[in-house]
Length: 392
Ligand SMILES: CC(C)(COP(=O)(O)OP(=O)(O)OC[C@H]1O[C@@H](n2cnc3c(N)ncnc32)[C@H](O)[C@@H]1OP(=O)(O)O)[C@@H](O)C(=O)NCCC(=O)NCCS
Image (cartoon, rainbow, N blue to C red; front, side, top):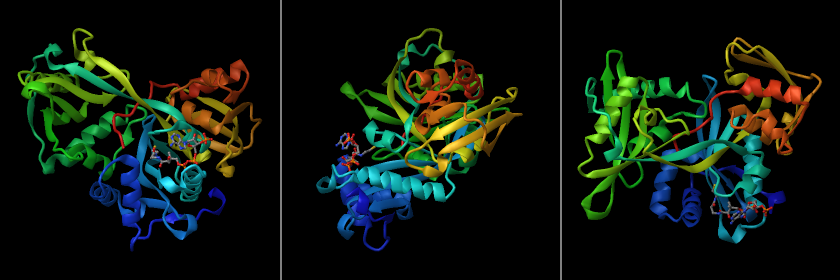
């Protein structure tokens, strides 16, 4: 099937129902819910393949950005990859992904990120594990902070810009976090089948932290608090948010949120009484090598030059030699150089985010270089462990 795939945007007049039918069959939801999902994403963000002229598979594009080195890099999130059962096993999904990537390259997209239900499909398309998302679980009885210096109040619609500014201030310091657009904010504020309540913490400089929570029922009428987001940019705000959560402890036995391996709220607690479990490694694809390398930020004090020879089986324009020159926190890329660091585009994805070092990639056959060149490349991309606190 892959060779004769017709690929393109879904037609607004008549293909929405066919896509909703494929999505609900693939993800065990109702056709109505899938219709709502499509409306939230926008029908213009659907891409389909039409084996035999009819819709047989789809995916959803979610345009946003992702923060690396203090800069937001244009990134296309991918969700809802699904093939109708009768067309599975014919490389339809592989063809859908490579056609989508060709389109993204032509449109000037730099990165693409997704959560994978099966990795081989996406590895073949050039994606690789590039960061983590953890589930964090904390019993409310274990929150040992009581600090009400700052005030807390419900978030109203008029607060949205200040809340978004607070998130941005936090996100730009955390590699891998999303530069959110409406699609993600809607998931936080109005999650599927539930209502999120939002509260913000105000300090001398305005909004210093906020959270949105849902109540999830548990045995005996008690419940747990599921945070669809929690962010704080000052120590006082983090303490105030923890106090706010502890104030729910008579009925809410536990709080749950998503984050990375080093969590700001947890560091405030006196003891390590939380539980963390890896939810997933998300996967990232470098869609445009030169564009992506120039768009991210780098540690300001590192001046360096790396000579890459990139291999990419799916986007041919990425093949060849590139020189990355870093100074004053910015990267400049030119074609050419001596290609001392041979790298597969999947390895480059993992190194770009800081998830793996060049030395680790050598051990995985993703990179060929001398120990000295590998170590120099590692230094350029060094940062904290990248993570994402949003699912999509
Ligand atoms: C996963 C899915 C999209 C694959 O579609 P497909 O057209 O049959 O896939 P392809 O023929 O292009 O296969 C590509 C690779 O995906 C993997 N794959 C395919 N079907 C799979 C399945 N049902 N389960 C796990 N992995 C699968 C295989 O590794 C395959 O490569 P291989 O045959 O060399 O091992 C399809 O089974 C589906 O719609 N499943 C339900 C929804 C889903 O899981 N979507 C992915 C969300 S991230």
